[in-house]
Length: 295
Ligand SMILES: Nc1ncnc2c1ncn2[C@@H]1O[C@H](COP(=O)(O)OP(=O)(O)OP(=O)(O)O)[C@@H](O)[C@H]1O
Image (tube, rainbow, N blue to C red; front, side):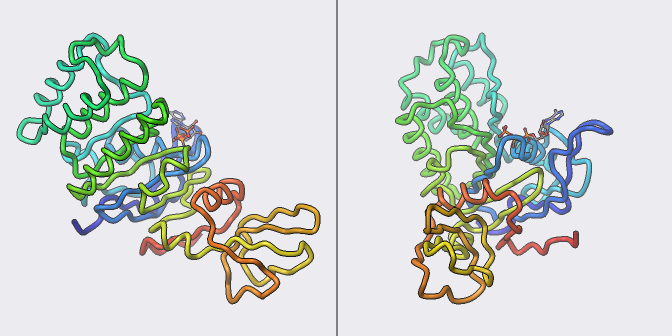
């Protein structure tokens, strides 16, 4: 699949007249067919962005297009799993999936949905209200995948799953997305669960885009350096540096060759993301083809 899955231009969302600004001047483009991680500290605007993309809220500034259209007009082509995973508590698991089929005539994939449920050993006759948080997550993901969406929006989908279930569901989700070219946009606080799964990153901080682009390009623009605390990194953009005794460790965006006084390695995804989360003032970096509007 080619084209753009989501595009934001000067996107803003404010709650109430004098209320909180959740998103402010966000510009980014997400190509179709990618698996994108949305990362950022609490309150950064991740859930707001996902719910705007799902067409459940409207921007107060700028524009957001999803699959080339206004989000509310493409609801049939996307699936959204909210953080609280609202399901009907009185329905059984089987009824819930039946409901999914009725709501999605002509596109419901019963096999895909039933497989997700079966892999969790869920009793199809069990009422949703009797399920654990993790089991409900599984049913919500089954509903979402059964819909055969072109775009899957997942808000911290794995938060209440045990590590084995998380691993297994993540693998099932990624295999399904790869097979069908589904675009997946997934917010998460667990960087380790994104490693190997995501090929794109959108890092938000205080409602603004701080990193946007293919993960490999973003990572390749950074180096982890170790050296003497008195050596200079003046020529480079230092994202974060720490000094322990006489030793300095820093994540940098090199602006030229790094001198021989530095021991240079590629940062892991975790090192890269954590450094950016800690360094909230680091300059924005994007490789998504979007030219940032003048501040
Ligand atoms: N319905 C609302 N009314 C008022 N303020 C809101 C509303 N929803 C979100 N906000 C505010 O907008 C900001 C962004 O919230 P959002 O839930 O999008 O952040 P988040 O990045 O998803 O956070 P978390 O990681 O904690 O889930 C927060 O300051 C929050 O208080």
